[in-house]
Amino acid sequence: MNYQFKTTILESIPALCNRLNDGNPHQLYFGLDVEQSSCAVSVVVDGGTPIYLGKRLRQDIVEIVTALTAQEHSVALAQEACGFGYEFHRQLLAAKAQSIVVAPETLNGKRKTDKADSRKLAIDLFAYLNLGNDNALRPIRVPSLEEQRLRSLHRERAQAMSLRNLCAAQARSLAVSINVQEVPNGWW
Image (tube, rainbow, N blue to C red; front, side, top):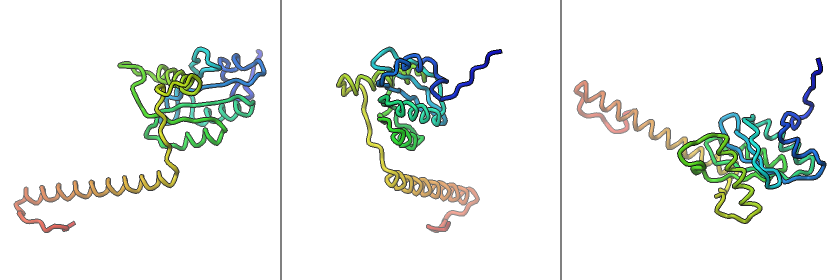
């Protein structure tokens, strides 16, 4: 049997390697539909037809981008802002790519699929960066780590206060149900 071993992360993506094998630097525009541990990935190479690369782990995407930038390709990525933080964005920037986080929006009408969303993001990224279509994407400002920590602190405090108030209201309700009419303020 003739076994072939994949020696680089790029060789595991033949659809992309076939477009890049001419030895010239290319411009790649990735659309990422981010999930908790993976992303649906589509790429537009030099303004061509989008190629869907399937779902990839975030770390694999960072390795792919690092390998592409090491080969002198220009790499830009777009992802929607989500509840998973901005660390992935920072990793892509560290891999020498242009990463844009955009405001979430309905990308494909009623029917939402990861593949369609990633393709739309890749096409819109190309239009935004190359065709001057400022309406294609709505980039957001990514907060610094310190700003994220402060936001987190305020959110956690607000959640703790809300939980405390909920528990106090439940305790007052329980007290009334056992005929204790007056509960002093701050009793907890």
